Length: 563
Image (cartoon, rainbow, N blue to C red; front, side, top):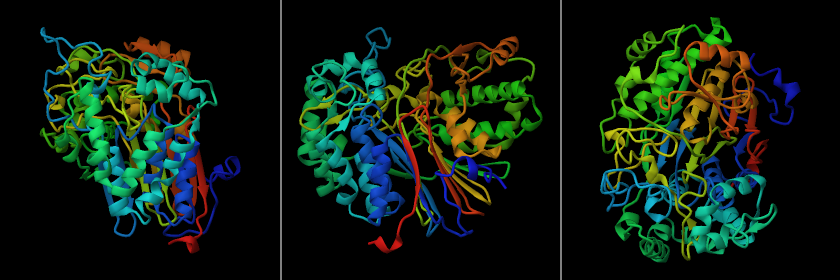
């Protein structure tokens, strides 16, 4: 009888109907109202969840330039109902052909400050355009032009600057000013725009039109590719025509694990999300969490986070290039051994676990959306250009703001990236390789429920999704998952990071007494978007993180309008 109490508390988020094999209502949750509206618009034209995902991805590329874009990458986790196919479309960026292991190091072998973060040298070959074309071609109902129409409209007519835009533009103002093409689009008189100022992107609209007309080649070949390469190489970048022409998305099998009566379906390498989540849940399965005090429960959860992130640093990378020991990492006996090393009375210093050394922290990034259509098709997608506004560089004449995802590689083994994450040889730079990611689009399935969720948040994505999974397992609805106070441990730096109110004053004192180092963050983090289909009663819930500016809608689609 989970979620029935929510009928009174959240009457706008779901509509009860008789039990059925398919939901009687669709749902969309995204990080921006325009993206949610675009998804609904496409479904009303006869599109399915996959058409909506293409439209939403493209609109977010226009209206959230600080989080995603045509110059970035992403993972789309898909469930197709008619054949029960579950697949992840990997549109992660790839290292250019001329990339080298030491390209961001000086003559003394030390990282060059800013080299992997700012400007076109920091950019991997984008995957979002390829992902949009691929999903439309193999999974959609509508034409690519139909799906891209809302994004083209917003690029041509503009979107108003919000408080969130201003905050993130302020954070990256120096880099936005460093490139005249970028400043001319995203700033107002070379300063952070006033709230309500329209951001118009005529060149980006033309690029979207080219993709709508020519598909994959519209971005990766022809005039757009020529402009991208010319602009990148003019400013010390290393892209070449073969880098773009050879880029293709990958279909990957999701990571599937079980916890209690729940089936977890999440992102495989080059994401660390599915493996890390599976490891943490396997370890937690060794404990009777429900019998623990709130303090002991948090201590145990932090300790499993620590151990999973240690393995992330040592073992994970692009599985097309390195052997990732997936079976071993997800083996329940291995998890039981890790759990045995957890002391309920003391924190385990990360240095005692071995692996890698040294770390720091900075950064914020990415966007997520979740979709359920009236047939039961679903999409969980996380997209990124890495740091806010990516590399800060717009390729002249294209409107395409480039990512700085090369920083997600291990620039030097055991050196932290801008999120404080450390890595080893498995995630070193190589031509064509895709950098390790924390993006974790996820489905949860029980006999009665289907959940769709994910979030931005850099290195903290995986732990945010973990806390939401545990909240789902406790019987709470999506508005609770997205609103939870958050805490995080990523092995290095050896500290619990937490939002204001993420830990009570008493919990902080007691955790310090167990030997934990704590750091309260000066801002909230994450922007989770979530949907729940409670199948046995056919109730549909949707929620958008109150920390962001997104919207979640549950709505009816008239099947007579289907094409």
